[in-house]
Amino acid sequence: MNYGGMALPRLALIAALLLASATARAGIPNCDAIADAYAGEYARLSADPGAKSPYPIELLQLVFQDDVPWSNVQASVDVRKGSLSTMIDAGRTQRLQEALASGADPNARVNDAPLLLFAASCDRWEIAEMLLAAGADVQGVDHQGVDAMILAMVFEHRRTAEVLLAHGYAPSPANVARLRLMAGKPEHEGMTQLLTERGVLPAQPVP
Image 1 (cartoon, rainbow, N blue to C red):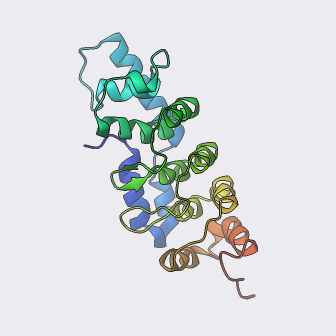
Image 2 (image 1 turned 30 degrees about the horizontal axis):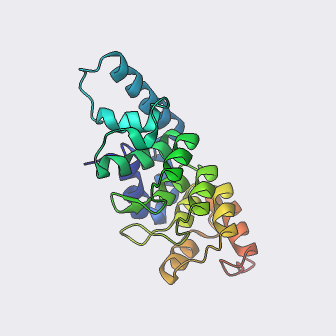
């Protein structure tokens, strides 16, 4: 079940469009709009508990019901994992921190993608820092081998990239190749410079 809402197909879309990253950026929903949509859905279901929704009410309670501890909400393991990626999309930093303090796994995978990729795709760099401090694998990849730095490169999310680098990011050979395919393109000039300065990418030849 697609508990991560609009976030989950976004990761697959990014991986599929690495060579046309400008197109990928244009096709990705605005993360603030996603956050507003989740909050609106929770408010709607709270006002009308019998209303139909694509999201289980317990998922939204895990994300938004601050007066009930995250660990006390009755939910299945899958819904509980899904709530973590939804918190990231919704920018619910404190609630996610509570969940991690209650034993949530910072390396949990939703639709076979680690939580860190959700943070990178929305440039939730504070959440990326939180996940990494809690033990998330900075080299974690989705089912296609894409890591968080690839998403930071696609969307020019420099602050997230700096967090990843501070935690020892070192790309796999496959992801070096992906980064090099994007390097030097005008839309990636800032990230190309950062990754070159940090030694992740080789220096670009002078035209």
